[in-house]
Image (cartoon, rainbow, N blue to C red; front, side, top):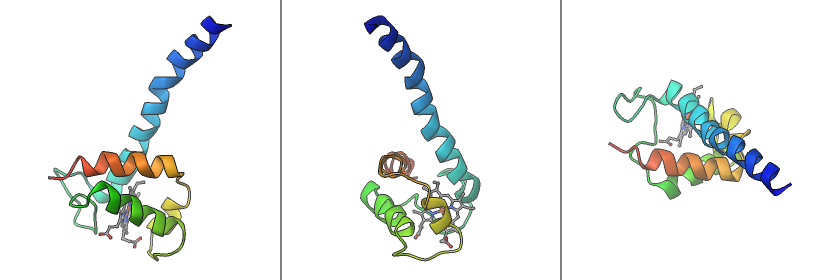
Length: 92
Ligand code: HEC
């Protein structure tokens, strides 16, 4: 049984990491990357706390927008934290 659980963990862990990769790629489709910003309002100069606060505000309806409220609506707190951490480290 223990061996089975270890096996499940070993298989699942890389996929959990990949899920964040897929999400960041979706963000970069619109926002560009730190190396090639798209010119739309972006988060590359924001710190981790600011990015997370913005995403929560979009998700919870405190901040309006054309695209982000719909995108943020599907994000969990842990996804928001992971995205904020990732993009705060891509600042140019
Ligand atoms: C469909 C295009 C699109 C995608 C995909 C997208 N965004 Fe946005 N984002 C926008 C637009 C447009 C704005 C400006 C606000 C608005 O109109 O919604 C924005 C604004 C933002 C802001 C606020 C920037 C500021 O200066 O206030 C943050 C933070 C942000 N997006 C993060 C993200 C993250 C993280 C993801 C990936 C989960 C993401 N965006 C995916 C289009 C997109």
